[in-house]
Length: 302
Image 1 (cartoon, rainbow, N blue to C red):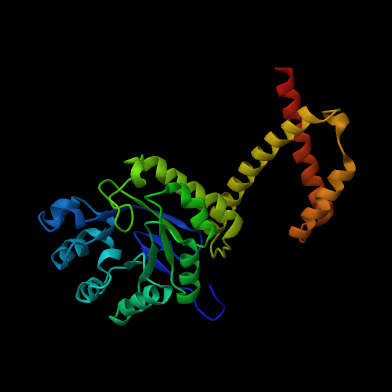
Image 2: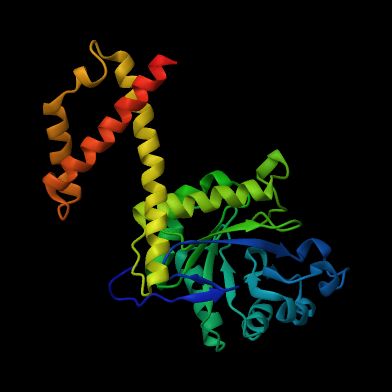
């Protein structure tokens, strides 16, 4: 994001993409595998979040059953189909061809907007190029999704790179450009596990790296919940490391506390949290350290 561009926000299936926390979008479905031989309504069966058509013949069903239409990476040069998709009035998710530059990608999104539909979201999929994702987000001001269906392990990195949302393919969905569901060559993945991994990424990494400006009490409490989840995860990790330290130190437990090191730790933390300051942080960290020491003693007695 740059200071000269106003951030866009697009609502897809009730999720605000580009505003507030990163989101997880499940149920990406591609009609391409049917190659037009199955009626789109029959193929979809029920409402879906993101749907990629095979041809213009699929668009009426998508208009009726989808929350957003996907301009798939394989047909971004089919301008008549792009224009028809933009004309549905649904949010348009524009994927990047693997060889496309940021300018080409952003330009295609602008082309959709020129058709009278400014509800445009960029989507990086396939073998994710997170540098390109970040650059497109900054250059366009538009929300950017990362389709992690092929490799859910990249969810945290995608959020850290600035993705406004993560896409996880649903049953029969596509694993990004050229994909057919699953995670690369390893075969189908557990969709529920992939969704959980994506949700963890937007909660924990988002809480650390994604600025939020909640406007309501409910939004503020949700943001606090995300920060608290990240805190709990870090505190658990710190306690585990503190337990290792206790086993390595010549004198462990409360008797082995290094108060000078603790004061230096608090001073370093205060540079990251100047509003809290050393005095308040010292009280917090004393409680954290004592909790870790008590836990280490309990484990030693087992």
